[in-house]
Each structure stands twice: as C-alpha cells, then as structure tokens.
Length: 84
Image (cartoon, rainbow, N blue to C red; front, side, top):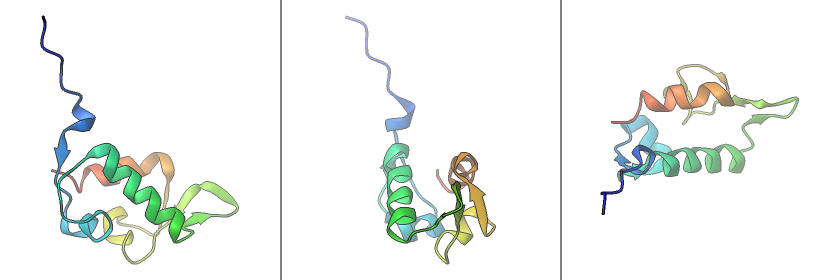
C-alpha cells in the first residue's frame, strides 16, 4: 500500500514571538494559526465595518502585519513571515 503524503498545511510550525502573543508559543499546524488569528480579529472586532475584507491591526497584530491595515487576502503573506 502506498504511503499517504503528508499535508503541508498540517505540519506544525513555530510562531515568532510577535505572533505567539496571539496564538501561544506552542507549534501548531498553519490552519490552527490562521484560525486563532481570525478568532482574535473577531473577538476584538478588528474588521472594518464598511469593508469586511479589511482588517484593522491592534497592538498585537501591528508587529505581525507591519502596518495598520491589511486585506484579508494579504494576511496570510504577513503570517508566513512569522512562521518557521
């Protein structure tokens, strides 16, 4: 029987210190990191009410994004820089 390929999205990744302020320091699959960031965004009402695709960074997200506002499509690019 052929060996099943590992899904790269499920491989645990280590968050940077900046991202760990939101996700915790433990290594997590990338999907869990994104889920925790979205939980933080929704809990703190960080989506722009006029444009739900825009995320307004708070003090914890600003070091991760490197700016005050990002689109939801751009968010994963910024998160990737903080995962190893």
